[in-house]
Image (cartoon, rainbow, N blue to C red; front, side):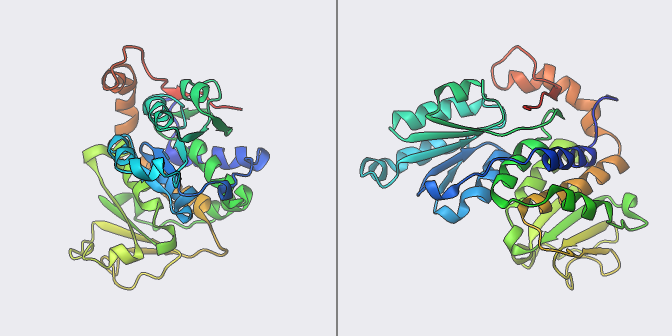
Length: 306
């Protein structure tokens, strides 16, 4: 358990790495109405990268249905591409590429593992560098992909993170909610996934865009909940005495917002019982791989790709 770092430390290590190893440019202009397929935060990374391209987004649960429903569109050649995003290049990404190729779509894989099973069968492979990280964290894996589009300055982001002033009673809350500007809305499901991975049913962590927050997400106010707003002024959501407004001194894009929010989640992780660290060891050797029909364990610390 001691070798498993917390999420906030993983964020800082990733920013240091990308300051020295900038990701290659990912040119979204070459894609036109593609399928974009990924699991978990790979799916959300796809939204960040390609939502402006009129793409069709799918995941491991609905890709078979989605691609079949667009069969006539594919036959008419209006849709010719599929972008599969998978940090590991394994698990569901393999059959997703096989299915896309069955429909004669050109397949592009975004991954950190150039020797993976998915990389061996994709028509085109974009390989991104990453660092060693605990299983499921996927900080550097997806941050590198996002930076390849946004071209933000990792050192500047880190300096900003280190300047954050946390509320004195930050550790005492049992519920935390993020409210972000609408332009950062795709970060919200990423935080929801981190809640499930790190805390399971043991702590409440919510995240909403400003627009979504208006739709009755804060009917119930509580002094046990800290509402954290990023880049927007919070005048309405949560108990007025338990709000933390975080101003951005410069324009952040998605990599910066991911880094800031993940860092804060890591600080929440540090302040609570170590649910993730106490359970991930059993998960990677037992019920995690078994859910995929595998007997071999997952890596507790996933090796980076440098």
